[in-house]
Length: 152
Length: 152
DNA sequence: ATAAATGCAAAAAATTTGCAGCCGT
DNA sequence: ACGGCTGCAAATTTTTTGCATTTAT
Image 1 (cartoon, rainbow over the protein chains, first blue to last red):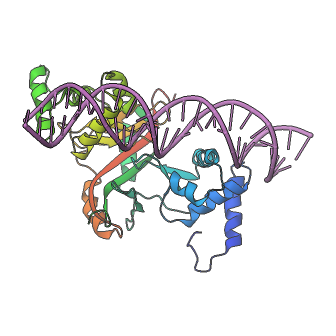
Image 2 (tube, rainbow over the protein chains, first blue to last red):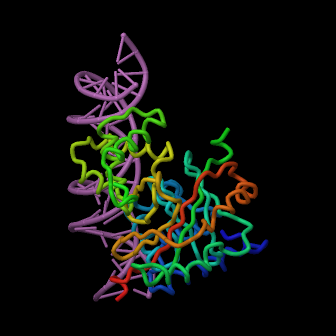
Image 3 (cartoon, rainbow over the protein chains, first blue to last red):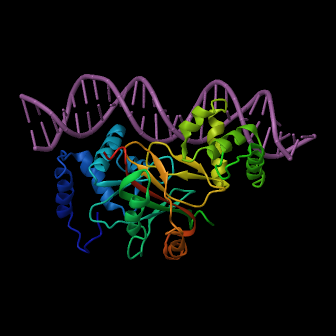
């Protein structure tokens, strides 16, 4: 659940999650609610494996299909960890941000404390100077390193 | 091959590629030379599939192992295109740079014209402020958009 | 000579697909 | 009731592993 307010209201959140699906014309089903709620509940991005483990009742194929539909509707971001499987994070209610990925254990952490995105103001320049591209609508910035556990 | 000089000297290049392997204490084998030379020869990053198709004589497992060893020795960069499989590009002889990826046709272009990496000087700050990470040794920055062909 | 790297084949892991039946609207 | 969604099982695709053989040093 989102740690937005100290008094977390589960019902309000449920409606929020429902709205997310409903607003995209998606049917509000149990498996979808579970996936979205799980994504909301975790601060850091979740891998397919983590989602599967946490929600064993949902069929394997459905997990893929649910995440696909969430990504294509813009509710969820697929993070390119460079690892075997992608990780996913919910977008709504969160600021644009970047990630640090452990190349040994795949741990993902959000980059915190940046006032503003260091790349955002480059987009327009790059759009102009690129030979082959005319539109840039997004970017992703990942840092790779070793987490404290793995660097010992 | 690197298009660095107008008069390209294949032998010189061969030594260059050999040196690359040798300098990391890697045995200079035919499969490794082939992979490195193929990576040098293409301006844009190559996916595992493209490499496999181009070099069918190299065993499947070896391709994975060769790329892994090249990445872990810092000669090759694994780019997270957000597509199904990662792409790889050789680093040596090329400046650190970033990419623009067309989300429709997967075309990849290098970002050109930046004097310096807009992210580099953030690394130390992020290393310090991160809770879970102690070392950051790399990053990747990709812009997503539509190429001129696909945006028409 | 010997330690490392390769190729092959088999195994494991990750993802996709087809389809019958269930469930939201 | 309809169409979209799900679960299951099977099929693909991608990646890893074990081991005998080859190869670079």
